[in-house]
Length: 348
Image (tube, rainbow, N blue to C red):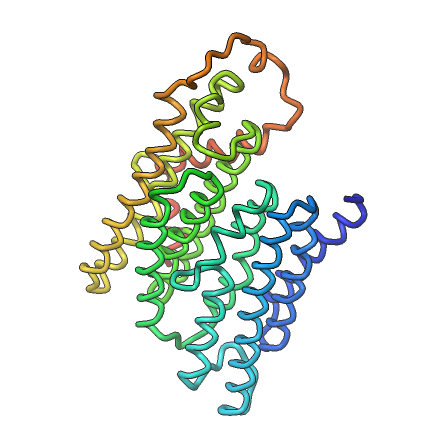
């Protein structure tokens, strides 16, 4: 792809998200989401591989459906209440429709079925954009829709944590595992959205850091399924020792950074007299932790069946820059001691 076209598409991605961030009118927010979708589609299909084209088509259909539902709901809201302001949602019907449309856009269960298939058809770089940047604009709108349907958000959240944990158990493809991981983390964010929006923002930020670390690690080690993880020790020994820590951080084990948002969310749910919901969410985290442990086991405690006679691959200098990975993986592993300061900053 030409660097000029790539720069234009990345500018379109940033512009669409920024328009949605800055808008208080539903039509402007919808327009920002559409610019965002249209900018990422050429990036998804750039390899011209049949799987990439199929994933792009599925993504386009899912996003077009969500955008049409969002536009219909905002027009219904204008018809029922006489105004287009995002902050003045007065009727429950358009509020529910908009929540469902945004849930489809970011891939919350039970509207998640496009997400694993689409991510599996993409390369890791585009998959990283899809798993992180593309979540920002819909999340911004979800945070602004008030008063939200509390029961609907809780049902979407707990369903996503369960489906995200359950769906990843029998997967062998890393990108599908990352997709189910994304669904589970989004469920945790939605659970606490109506009680503490700042805590949702903190969880989203930590999720972005952890996901960025994992995608870049897999990209450097050129891993796409569990079997290739077993050979990664010969290519990059240092990276092989770091990736299990990143995986366990995603699973939410203390004393790693990923434990921080789960801890604060369970605490907030308990404060709101939702202890049964907090219990189910904590148990669903064990499902996710199982498949992260599977990946860690494959990397660190198994050896490839065919003997690698050459020891040269890991001695060759890597042509890829590793500074972003070093910063992100340090943040993924070591930020838990900052929990009191982080809690004070984000739970006002």
